[in-house]
Length: 235
Image 1 (tube, rainbow, N blue to C red):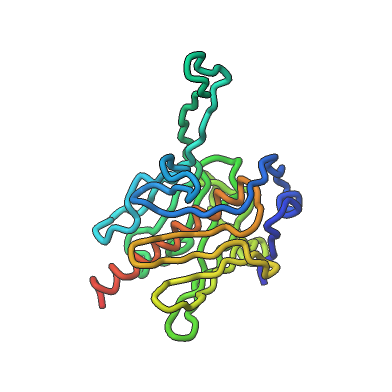
Image 2: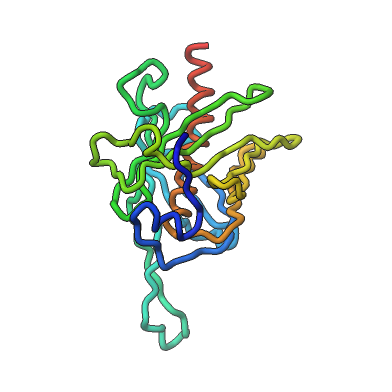
């Protein structure tokens, strides 16, 4: 059995990481093209991808995931009394779905995430399981403190941590998933209705964990698109 990981600060202490000072409250995010925006501030992206993961024609095997930070100037505009801010992109993860992943044995997983910088939680890979009614559930398994430059990219067996348990939550007309931590506590709810993709984070979590959750959500969406494409190509 894999080790378990809390969604709170204690989890980072247990894995030897320093917890972020930024604890962020519940929030709702949605995907618009290659940008992730907060429902409360739809004009400014909080995260960006360098490729459209929902495009059927997407042939990329690796996608860069960036956080968009707002640097607020300490100097106010004297005439308008407005505090200036400047966007700064920071590359924090790679999302990966290797070419011909379904037929290869030389890759760590069909879908996985690697940290571009050591400040992130580590590398994450999916384990998938078929549930009733042909639905797929996901376990996001964390190799703490690993980055894209590590070899191997992932720990094995009990050295892995359960980061998120993602279970289908059936609703009429919607594709929904419930996200839980290793203790079974709900941390997020994901909903897809038509072309609207949304994840609602329901607990206060650290900046590190929010970054990982949003990246994992996007990897799950990429999984859905890529699996449909694979079915059309080889079915």
